[in-house]
Image 1 (cartoon, rainbow, N blue to C red):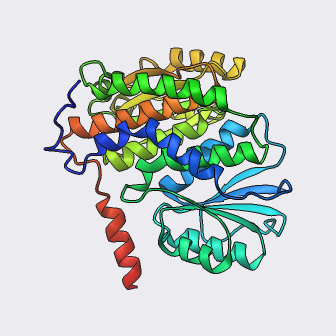
Image 2: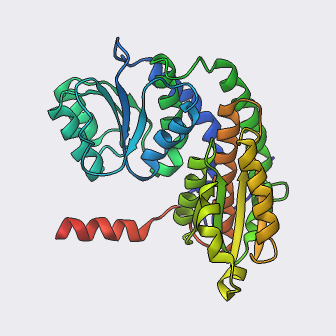
Length: 345
């Protein structure tokens, strides 16, 4: 099938980057097999990163929640928690290698003699690794960090397997690869793409992403971030059961803003039965209030497959939203201006 021509609105080929999602896994997995890991299990694992570079840590935390025997946390900011010490493993994730906040956290990890493994395509992170002797999972450069998630997530999952935070994932990876290749074929053609249908149903509405608080909670965050960065739209969200204890009250009185919102409910067969029941009842209560209600189900059997299938679909939704609005998905001009302004002050 020849690729559709989106070059008018996608000159830097975000379409192509999303299509490589499955292929990135093999590279990231192989790279992570080659670096040394601590001989003894760490007391905790902290993934230090920002934006797209931190997302792999969020997804790992959700994936490993049922099996990890030590805490896994994601640290977005300049400072590490006080409990990070020389028994902790800090996974420093900076695609560019120059992320300001992540570099500050890396220096703190070094000062506390924490065990460190970095994931990066180069920059200052790699230079510090050479100077201090900690290993680096090397990633190919030249992409937007959010478009390189396959590399970092595959590397983090592989490291987690080697650290016995996850059971061996070989069968899950095989199923995930098959499933994602099928999804990619389907979604790459707007005529068959579920994501294109979802994007059209969202239309001019502001997306409101809901999910359970289990496997898909961080996928929920990924959907919002991709819509914000690729489609240049505001997107909001919340999780069940918590939203039933507060946010749902914001829907009680009729308001014009309600009809401007499209609720996307991410569903997973592994959601707690009570959460599945709450999702059904919440839909009954809000269906006539929201401008649109769109159910989205994960695909596959293994937890890894269900996680990745929903991530991949969300990336395509954000892309097709951008194309519907004739917006170039790649540049992040306000972020670039923000960084430049901060550098000058």
